[in-house]
Length: 126
Ligand SMILES: [Zn+2]
Image (cartoon, rainbow, N blue to C red; front, side):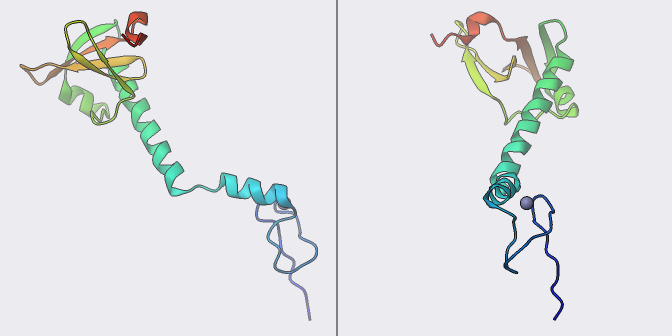
């Protein structure tokens, strides 16, 4: 009976010994499982990608630190307004939504948002 050569699922080395072995050792086994993409990781990566896209859209629309732009302009750049990293409330009680270091405020009277770059004083909790 000819024995079929099996290979480690992680490093692709030929395996010795038991025919049901999948890995050369415990290191390869854990490395394989740690690198295996799973649904939760894929979801986190997708959100991170959206947040980066949002940040990039805000940066593109606001090259000089402050700008008022139409929401549909940001949408065309890939912006998704339901994703943000944190919020900040100004002393005037305006709630800004941030994507990393760029934030925006929904303006009540229009289809526009006010975009700002984060300043050091905004990082304080109170
Ligand atoms: Zn291996």
